[in-house]
Length: 124
Image (cartoon, rainbow, N blue to C red; front, side, top):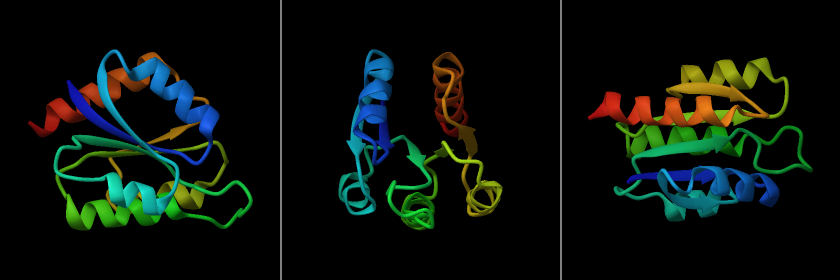
C-alpha cells in the first residue's frame, strides 16, 4: 500500500480525507509544519499538503515551506498542494518550487485517488 502523508491544519478536513483514502493508502497525518517535518521520513511515498496551515493567519504559507523542505530532503517524493483559497500567487510559487500538482478545495476524491496513484507510479 502506498504511504501517504496528509498535512492540513483543519481536523475536519484531515478526518474526511483520511476516511476517503484509508482503504487505498497507508496514511500518516500532520496538522502543522513542525508535525509534518517530524512525521516525514523515507517511508513516505507521496505528500498531500495544504498551503495554509493556520486559519487565523491569512499570510501563512507553512505548507509551501514544507514543500521546500521536502524537495530539499526527499527530492523524489511527489508533493500535491491544495488550498481552499483563491491564491494564484501561492499556486504559482508552489509549482515553481517543485509541487507536482495543485488542487483547489473541495477536492474530487475520485480524481485525487487517480492523481496520487499516477504520481507514485510515475516515480517508480
